[in-house]
Each structure stands twice: as C-alpha cells, then as structure tokens.
Image (cartoon, rainbow, N blue to C red; front, side):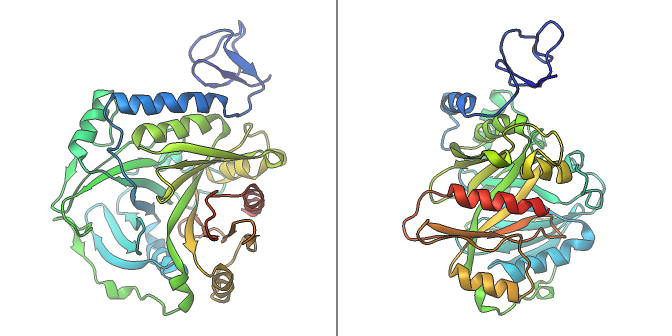
Length: 391
C-alpha cells in the first residue's frame, strides 16, 4: 500500500480503510506516495519564529557552548587520544563524579567537546541506540548540544509557560554555571542543553567533582594539528518522515533558523542547514527524500540509519592548509572514506574520515576559500554522501 503524509499532523503512514489519517483521524488532507519537499517546511518556519517572538524567546539562546559525546567506559581514554591526535583540541579539565567520568577538550573560538562515560546503567538515550551495527555500543553517541543562555531562569520559565518540559524539573545550579537539558527528542534521540556561566572562566567542575590529573593525556607535537581549528558544524542523520519535525523542533528550543536544503535525488538524500549567523556553529540535518525501503534502493543516508539509528554522523572542523593537513593525517594513520573533494575555484574542499570505533563519529575536515559564503556546494555534498555507503 502506498505511503501517505497527512497535511494536518505530518504523520507518514498508511491510510485507514475509510481514507483517514491513523493519528489525527483527518480525511482528505493527504498526499499519496510520501516524498519530502520544502513546501511545508518553508511555510512552518515563519510560524515558529513568530511564536518565539510572541513568547519573548527571541534572542535568549546563543551559540553552541559544548557538545557532549558519550563513550563506553573502556573506550574513554582512546576517544580522548583520538581527538588529541586528529584535531587541534587540547584537554583542559578531567574529573569524575558519581555519574560520569568527564574529559573536557577545548580550542580557540570553538564550542568545547566533553567526552563522558557513564558509571551506571541509567541512560535515557539508550532506547535511541538502535540499528544493525550498534549492539556492541549501547552507550555510544553524541548525546547533547549545549547552548549558551544569558538568563537561564527566564528562558526556562518562558518555555514552561508554553507547555515545554525538561529532563529535570529544576535548573541544576553550580558555583560556575547553571544548567538544564531537554529530554531526548523522538526524531533524533538527542537532547538540547542550556548553560548560563556565572564566571568569566568556563569551568565544568562542581562541588561533587573529583579532579583527575591532566598529564595522563599528552598532546602530540605534530605541526599539522595547528591547522585544524574550531568546530564548524555537525550533521545528524534523520529519517525522511521526521525531517521537517526535527528541524522545527530544533528551532523551537533555540534561536536558529532554517537556511537551505541541498537535494541529492539520485541518492535519495537531503542535506538541510540551520544557522544562527554566518559566523556561528551550524546545525545540519541529513535525511532521505523518501522513506527506507531496503538497503539496495534506499540510498546511503537511509541505509546509515538502518545500520546505526538516528544519530550525529560527523563533526566538521575548519581546516587551514587542507591539502597538507590531509596528507599529514594519512601519514599519522588516519583513514578516510574519500579523498579531498572540491577546489579553490568551487569555493571549498572537504573530506570524511572513517568512523571512529570509540565514538561512532566521522571527522570532516573543511576549508572554505577566500570569501566563499555558500556553506556547501551540491557536488561536494553528493560526493561526501556517496562515500558513506562504505559504512
């Protein structure tokens, strides 16, 4: 039976025998043979922005403060060492409490990376760790995107006023910062966190933290590491049917706006970009155009979700002297899914590493030349998307 998409609630599924949506029971509000396009999304984006303004939420969430990457405890150290070997990030804090072991990595003009490992089995993200190739990694994923918030009390009160709830009912207050996060959303299984710093220095220690020595982690003295700069963007794999909902949900929690989408139709894939500004970390969502059917015909994006579930696929790092850096990374045993794609004439060069066995995340290295402001090119997106068939 053909798939439908309800024009009322956007549910993708099969019609009831009398032609109604199985979720909202509406009739005659459907398009047979579900396929993503931008019509609904472009119509809904202004409504979300208007709602943010109505509830006085506009301007209350800034750029990305940190990214929380959870690993299996046995992979924690090697996950940190990978970041030291293959990015410009350095360890600035290491501590543990009764819940987590945490290592904080930082580089200039960038969101921090927090590598964490749980000490107990309580994991609200575990139900989203699905896929044919994830059974050995029950706790491994990028879990939470944490955004700067200048007035957390006000932000939380306003979100609760419109019926939104958080993972904890109360804000978690510490000497250095206050913090709260959402429950994992059903579209991607990731959480959005919000942090207000109380001091100029960004310290993640709390009264419950036991500080660990930093000298257990040594930053290699490789010249190429200085070429690998800030976190430019991440890309999350989303099911075709959840593409619109995932983007709009992100916009409701932050001040980001949907910017544009690149369709790669022959691979059944859409790359969608949301941005706060041209200079901030960008949030990328990649989905199928049509829903998964089988591994042979659904394309690499939906096949990836079949294998690994919905999750962050890659982290992209701004990279100077990218040709030399790519060569040096290979000489230091980093393996890649694809050679460098793009050129100065096209505006940018990019590549994907193989997936890390410790974080299940791919590293992207990207360089935009001169005054290129297009963010991506369609040819590069197509080449990079195709390379993920190897995963």
